Image 1: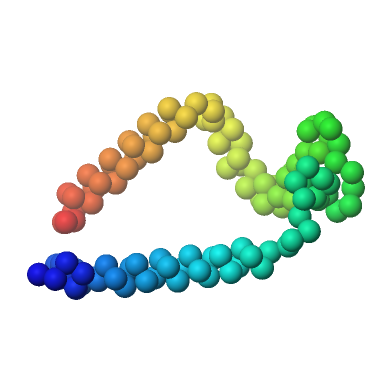
Image 2: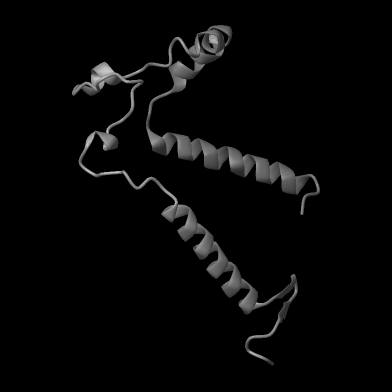
Length: 118
């Protein structure tokens, strides 16, 4: 078998030279894109600061926080009953959420395999 020829697998064929050429072309395209970037960029200047519509950023993160309360007001208001229920069962412990995820996934898989799944 030719080491650089086509390899036949159960799902088709592939050729390592095609992949090498593809990676080289992707690298060249990425390099050209990178080189066409802004040359006036300077680290350690105001260019690295967050742009806040021309406002000077505050040193306090609390003053810079933008809440989502007004943005999602209609959505939260229309689903207020659902969110009240979620707040009651929400405890913030990731182990509980992973446990629920695994438990529900197990139930779904059991139902799937009992009713003629794969």
